[in-house]
Image: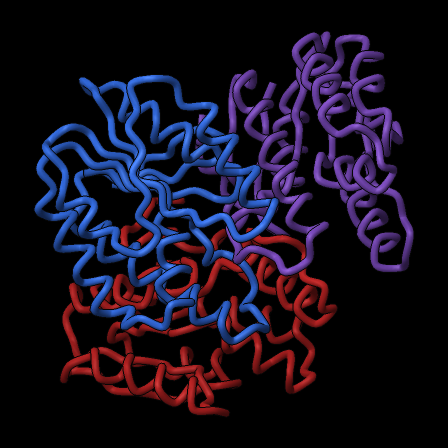
Length: 164
Length: 164
Length: 164
């Protein structure tokens, strides 16, 4: 299990895809994005176009733990945890319970698992209370996943720095 | 002397506490937080509950250098510089003079000293002028302390990356 | 070619200047800043005062690739890409074309080249659409430059962490 953290447009998805494609396919791409607007539609289309054949896509905007648990042992890429967490918060679910279920699913994954997420905690405290809460929840999620991950990398300008 | 930098909810306080508890106690916790609202009250209570026995707590929202200088050689944890700097700026004190006094106190600390601070400079330029000024002052403070520190770490997802 | 990334007031300019001054001079400083307000005027003056003699300054708020291509093989410092990109976006130029031209100029630089830029992608998604776009463009630019750079460093609290 590898946790790939990175900033906006840091190349983290590309790095994660390369990690998965180094494993024997077929590969599963678990997408957490929900396209609410044109900006998101375009981003999803760009990511999909970059991945070639050999990929199966599963949409899991909310039921991410279940999607990981359904794996058959072939390599799985989750892109990204940030959007999943956003969906969980906006759906007013119990974040702590959802986090625990996700961590448990990751711990029991049947095959190679690469998780992509945005590192969002290195800026000034946001004025928006929801943004502050989101930032805190993202931090907690990353800490728990990093604790059980075999590897953690921070992608800077497309280049992975080893954290763990 | 160790400077522990990290993002929001990065596990930096927990890492710093582990560093101090690896030293022979009793340990002194210098708290800079002032609870103006419920959110802060809750954070302070959470941090205090996590620390077990063997800790003495000193409140130093503003007179941080003096609190460090009063040490008797037993290990000291300061959590955190970000809140101290916020207090100094809001109290309209001379930030450069306060910074110089703090750096001098750290240089002369009688025993092991671990300083926790938020890295806040990796986001987009804030629209708010006070936030911009705060970000600049935090950067200056971190540079000066890092220059005299024996070790600097950046905590990412609960895991320390060695900077110095 | 070295890409020096860092947060606000992280000491990235100072580190970049030290890298260049380790080379045989004279040294060229390519400044991309345009002083629109007092805050910028002050920052420019501070940076200029810190650099000693032996430096030639070239202003290139927009024509950065051309300024690099005009080099005679002596060491060049560009400070900073963030402001250049801001100028390009505000001038409503074709960012992709400008980026390609800059990357090409860097690849063909006649002598040592150090590029300074702000890492801005590690915060919460900005509410401002222009800030979001800028953040994305900065990420793309950093990835392309890092790919061709010999060295990439991330400056944290004045201390360079090796990325590549």
